[in-house]
Amino acid sequence: MDDLAALVARIDACRVCVENPIGAPLPHAPRPVVRVSATARLLIAGQAPGARVHASGLPFDDASGDRLRLWLGLDREKFYDASRVAVAAMGFCFPGYDARGADLPPRRECRALWHDQLFARMAQVELVVAVGRAAIAYHAERLGYACDRKAPLEEWVRLFAAPQQEPRLIALPHPSWRNTGWLRRNSWFEADILFPLRKAVGKLI
Image (cartoon, rainbow, N blue to C red; front, top):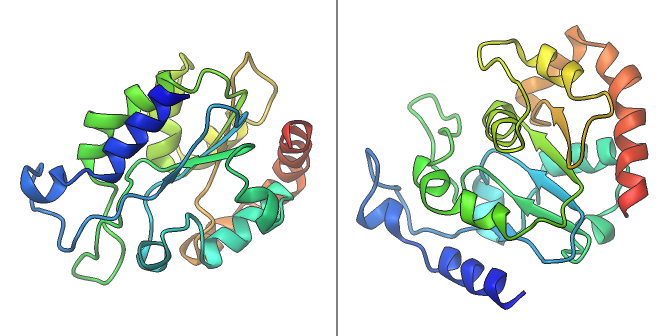
């Protein structure tokens, strides 16, 4: 526990994306957002915080989080109980916006510096819910699952919906409004994925 807490303290103090970045520096002051514990058996692995989460410091504290909690069957109280639910995105800080006003991809510094160390200290996790392509690809590789990086998202979601070895991996599209079109085109998602997802989450919470 102390080892994990010490690592999280170092993550909280990280400024490498400003002081020694890969590519362009972070365009604002870093504010890493990560909530983990040595007891949480469920890990929510997202992409990167948005502007609202950057302001509040609370992961998925936005409309995407509301949709994700609906998918998981969790209220805010259970979702934010770090003793039971860990939340750690591929990028810990809000990456800023691109020229079109969309969120930039997760910063590469986080994975390079912190991710392998962090998840090695969380062996108690029994289920990883990976949200979005970057998180799915990283955790599939980390957990030893075969995963074609060029496969369409719907193939990944279907692949990891079935029961697997432990720790299990369940893949989800990002719950952003930007994926509303994907959800409409893939109506099977709600019918085939959400019930087993909620069942798996319910067993751990």
